[in-house]
Length: 367
Ligand SMILES: *Cc1c(COP(=O)(O)O)cnc(C)c1O
Image (cartoon, rainbow, N blue to C red; front, side, top):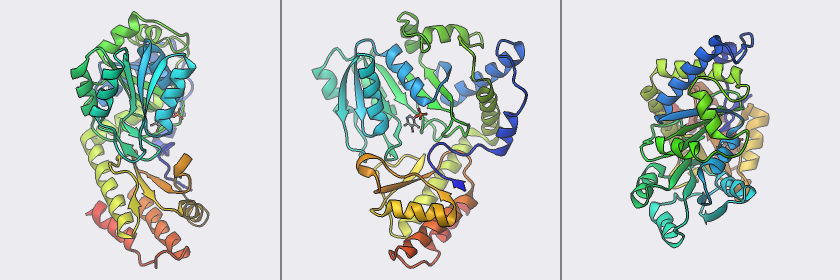
C-alpha cells in the first residue's frame, strides 16, 4: 500500500534502521550527545531561539502551549478541526477563549484579528494553524504575527506548524511558539512533539510555571542541559537526529524546492483532468481536491490501486480528498497515484482515461 495521507507519512527505510539500535538509557552521556545534536539540528530547521521535545503526539504540544502561554484569555482561529481543537483545549483548562469561526477554504487576515483584539483588550495570546490540515489551507501566519506584534508586542503568538515546519521556509521572526510533530513532514513514527520558542515565550514560561507533565519551565531547565524532566522518547529522538541529518545533507533549501515543485506538478496534473483545488490559498503540505464523489474515488484508489489518500471531516466529509506532499515523497509513487485517480474517474464514468494526469505530473516534476 502506498501511504499518501498528509500524516502520518511513511518512515524511510534508513531511518527505520537508525531507530533499530539497542535502547539507550536516557540519563547517559551517549544519549545526551544524540539529544544535543537533534536539538541543534531542530533549531536550525525551525529558526527559533529555544526548542523543546515532548513525548506526546502533536496535540500534547498544543495543550502545553495553551496552558503555558495563555494567562487568562486567548483568541483562537477556527478554520478546521485543528483550530477547533485549540478552542477545546482552552475550554478544558478554563481559559477564556474568543473563537474566530472562519471558513475552511479562505485564509484569515490580520485585520479580522485586530478587530477582535480592539474589542477584547484583555486577550493575551493568539492560537492559529500555519496550515489548517482539514482543508489544506495556508494562513499567512508570518504576516499576521508581524501585525499582531506591531499592535501589541506582549500578545503571545502561537502557531501550530505541524504541517508547515519542514514543508517550506517560514519567517519565524514574530512567532512566539511554533509547534510541530514527528509524523508529518519529519517522516517519523508518531509520538514526538516539538515546540520552538522565542526568547519572549521562554521568559513567560519561566515565571509562569503551571501544570505537571507539561510544565514547560521544568522541561526548559532540563533540555538546556540536553536531558528531559521525564524519560525521553529516546528512539524517536534518535530517528529525528537521523532524518534531520539526511535533510540537511540533501540541503534544506533544495528540500523545500523539491516539495514546492512536486506540489505544482500534482496540482497541475489534477487540474488538467478536470478536478478543482479546494482552498483558495493551498498549503504545500498536501493537495486538497474537491469532488462530490471523493469517497468513491478513495475506495477505488485503495482497493484497486493500493493507494491510501485522506478524505475530509465534518462538512467536507465525502467532498474532498487530500494527497500528501510532505517529506521525501517519491515521484514514481505520485505517478502511480495520479494515474490511479484518473482511472477511478474513468471507472465512475466521469472522464475517459487517456493518461493525462501522469503525463502532466511527469513533465512538470521531472523536467
Ligand atoms: C496532525 C496535526 C496535528 C496533531 O495531531 P496529533 O494527532 O495530536 O499528532 C495538529 N495540528 C495539525 C494542523 C495537524 O495537521
